[in-house]
Length: 74
Image 1: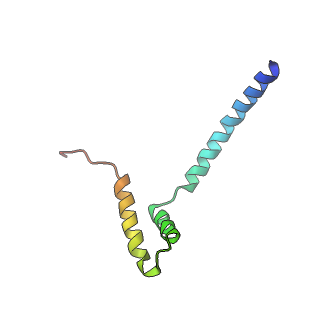
Image 2: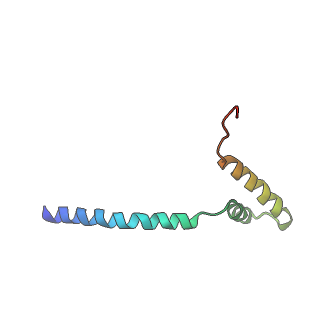
Image 3: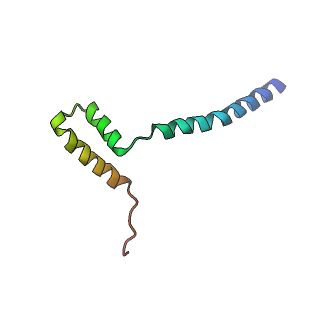
C-alpha cells in the first residue's frame, strides 16, 4: 500500500513540473498569420506568382475570424 501511495505521489509531483514546460513549448510554436499562411501555401504548392495573393487573402480571412466582435449599436 505504501508503494502505491508513494508511486502516485511521485507521478503527481512529476506531472506538476512537466505541465509548465509543455505550455512553454506550445507558446513558442505560435506563428503569426503570415507565417501560418505561407506554410499552408507551400504545403498546397501554390505557384510563386500567386503566392502573394494567396497569403494576403489567407491572412485577411484568419485575422477577420479571430478579431473580437464589436458590440452592436456603438
